[in-house]
Amino acid sequence: MKSKDSSYLPPVQFSAYFVAPNFIFLLGLSIFGMFMKFMTRYKWTRQLLLNYPGLFSFGVFRKEPPSHHHIQQCSFKSQFVGFGFKGKNILDEWRITRPDVEIVTSVTGPEVAYVTTPIAVVSAAYTLLEEKVMNE
Image (cartoon, rainbow, N blue to C red; front, side, top):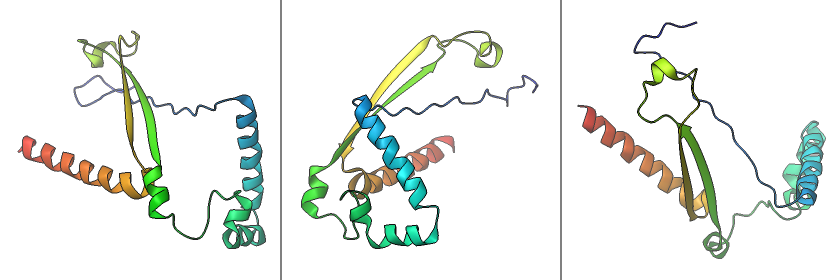
């Protein structure tokens, strides 16, 4: 066990969840995942996937990039739930008490790959620079 000095903080506990609209969707996704696992196991099946991505993904993936129209039609929504402690010394009581604060955050935005990724990277860089300036 580590000592309780000021440099030690408890580990972050993280769990990710995927919500399916119904059991049939979840079953289909599971079968598709098992099929893809098989297809990526051998060199000749991987080559088939690379040569014909649209056929094996039911049109979800293709070799051509998406059109500007398709990119503008896409969006995403992610929900984050966090639990923590309010007004307690986390180094003393984190093992013996349950979290007493919950925060729920929803993030929505435009298409996640081509539009949101550069926005997120620039925002993260800006935040790091802001924190660096504040700590100097």
